[in-house]
Image 1 (tube, rainbow, N blue to C red):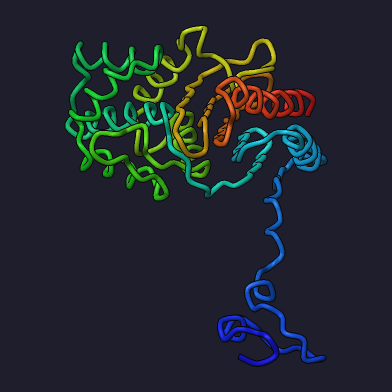
Image 2 (spheres, rainbow, N blue to C red; image 1 turned 135 degrees about the vertical axis):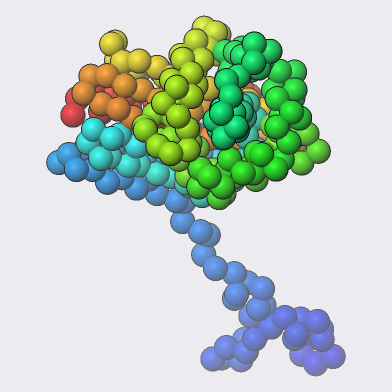
Length: 283
């Protein structure tokens, strides 16, 4: 021992100019990472700045961790926040399950059976978990992963052991899925896309919260929400929606966790949705 400093302290210390010993742990700790910022781009003058400022303000007082995606085909507008951050999917993965079912049926040149139609309707319009588990098991991970590859959804990791609600999703991939559902492409047939949008447009009223909040009259709404409470990160509350009308064709994804209650998460999502609908309607 020398100077009253333990050997361990010397290992964890570095001498600076005056000979004062500073713990390396403190010296090496970077400043707290800056909170990710909302980024927006748009072909419409002034719209990107307006959206960035309004989404930022809507989240300024909200707790939890929020990821946001917006894409409007009409004005070529994109906004993102934490687009690559992974979240437990909860029930928003049900749209992926339905898309996989239709993609697989298209590959084999068949229509869905009456049983599959019944299960699909319950899964999307009422968020029926048993119907989802049945379809998830029927498809299997090989087909689900095959669809994800075809869709370019490289950041989505299917839940293991049948736990579809623990599938890892990101804003980037959910926005890719919404683009596939709402625009002609080689992955999903036009009939498949229309079927998905039809069911997402028939979600029961008690589950039509989230991204549709504040949508202008005359704009069509397709939505799927998810909610799940776990011991870590509290409530996961998510909403994905596609909207068309009023001169716009856009999709919104908001993923959240770290919410104290389900309703708190819903309020956060709706604060974001409200300003997006308002700003696009005014543009």
